[in-house]
Image (tube, rainbow, N blue to C red; front, top):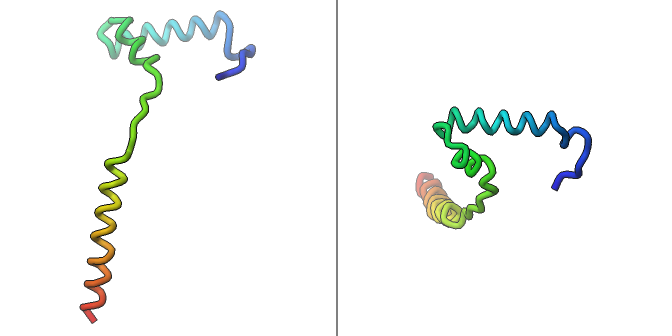
Length: 75
């Protein structure tokens, strides 16, 4: 949360926000302001990385012993 201060509130900032929302709606949402605002103010999406962590661990767990065995047998 941001503390209210002179640079984060006021008519100028509100005007800039409205202009930016209108521009975004016109360019990226085909003029649909409701859809544009949903994209802009959608909030943070919580994503988990459990599968990619598992996959990386599996690959490293298989690759490191294979590499060590290959180095041991090459001498």
